Length: 395
Image 1: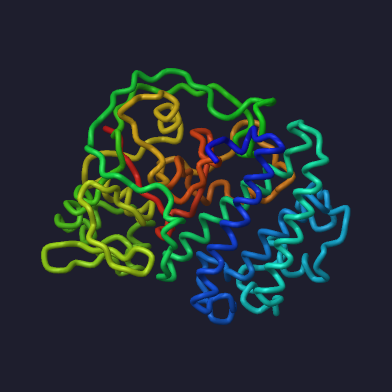
Image 2 (image 1 turned 120 degrees about the vertical axis):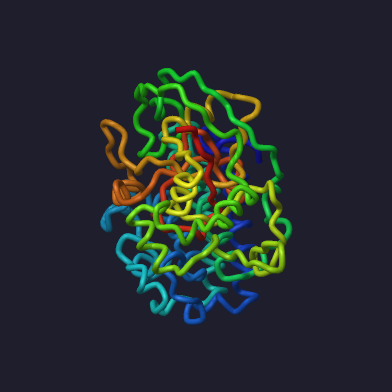
């Protein structure tokens, strides 16, 4: 389904919502087959949710904004009760603390799958009677984006837990690409989105002019081979390359290579979905934190791109530029655009300003319909479980 969810019509949305739910359930079954549909058997990690809770939350979110016609994410905003007696008590991420999601006494996997099917059936029936306008289709597009994001979260949770990803869900293959540099002339670009352009996330509001000075950027992400040179030169043992926060993180991790890397004889291997693979030299390095990306840049005499530079390059259409293999760290903290105001999903962006880092692009696990050079992702600097890498710019 190679279209943008932002402008999807009713017919496209119906197919995409069904596709997203099929994808969600198929990935959930990977956890179930490993016995991890029981929250009590899932490791309590801050970077993931129990899959059973996440499954229920996905369906609850669609029910909340579409079937229950909530105009906001505040607890009293729904116009109708949940189909589940304790739905709000179980699955409202704003009121259910992360640490509590392992001990809620959730329904069985079978019961929650039934809930998922019933919610989707009612959503599709209601969609069929909804007018074709951006305002009327907003909650459907929101629910689709939300489920697609959780689909990618399921994929990196499988990676974190060392579980296999079914072949049909491997997404686009990451191809090795020759490195190069692109010189951009710079100029004024319009960051953010305009009213009337379809679905817009609140952190993209609104369009505003930004001047970008001339810059030189890598055409591809930093490769495994390039990053191996940093390791071989003692990059993880030399504090002069690391920021203060990076040194604190590094001491806690006791890390000497990216997450999952292992040296065997003269080759490096990494764990990918529960199995070791030999690292391809020209493939982009993945599973690196912001701190590791910053340290590499300090060692290499380079820097990370700003969020504005990244968007300028992505919008340039330059034929040598590659993006979409992995999410990419920028050097820009995640901050609101001028005039920001939260949308109905009030906690989507606002709680994460200043503490998170702006991340751009997409990964091989990101659904194509979600991808856009305007999309602003954001993560804590220490996250390395994601499908994420980086490219550099000249100083």
